[in-house]
Length: 399
Image (cartoon, rainbow, N blue to C red; front, top):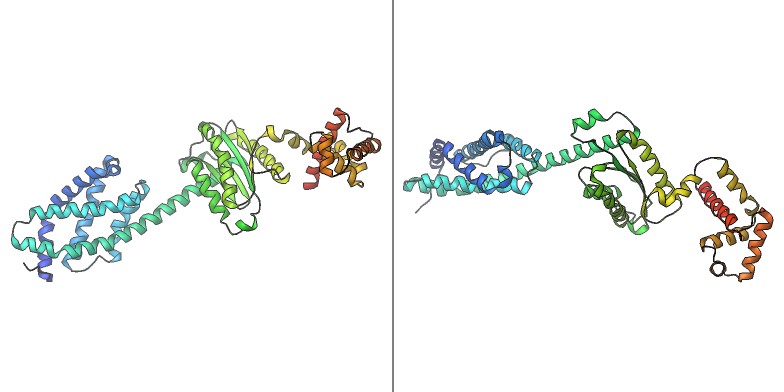
């Protein structure tokens, strides 16, 4: 049996299918809704109106291109691209959207084949096969491209909205209208994380820090609000999702691993929207102290750095502690002895070993410290003062 491919035969087949178009569209939709769960979950309006219009639009475009013996032109894909954009906004995955085109083509073909009753109609049906394949080859790339562009635009828009809301919350600016516009819930409190990423080691110098950080933030929760820059940023987790607090520790660890850089963070909680600025300031100060004191990668809370936090505040006590060390500043061997004693939990044997000196030498230097300062590091109460003074001095040097 020969298969006619002349324009007249194709035009005749196109007219034949066009006459049965409502029935073919109905059969097509029945198969799609039966096979694709995410399409069944669309609103009643979309199922009753949008999907039938989309099915008929595809069939009409195919029949027009078939009658003219050509593939669809890019300018003819506008309606189908609009449909793809609506599917993207509905959150239907791209692989599902594309599979529906192939599933619909098979369903439509079976429907038309059931109507072909004469040898001529069957021959025309076979002659149309290359055009069906050509139609799918022209339409699916255009639909996929439009879908991906829309998803990228939506993702960018949502990310920018979350960034704007996070910045407004941290600054204490009005945020209700902005949050409502983008459907961002602000009920309850927030866990506030301020993190800092050190300069990557040479092995990770070329790693895309911002991309790594944003990917890890997205992995924490879709409800997380954040404002990120290369050196760090702020992450706000809705307090209602308290189980995510532990995920923040894992987030910091993964950022450090991905960037190859020491990453530290300060953590605080805000009972409500109006408490976010104070919580962000507290978390930011904790992060700054952990970063500048070269603490290892981790999330730090007030309990971890309470003394350092307090000693970083201006006041007469901090000033006095700094003057306590003044007599030692031009005698580095005495300062080293004091620091070794404190760093080794007041164990003189370990402190002497760390300094690579005899224990008697260490004892002499500690006694000398008592003579020049008037405070004896051998006394527990004076030793605590010296420990606080060293911490205040370290903080003072990094500011």
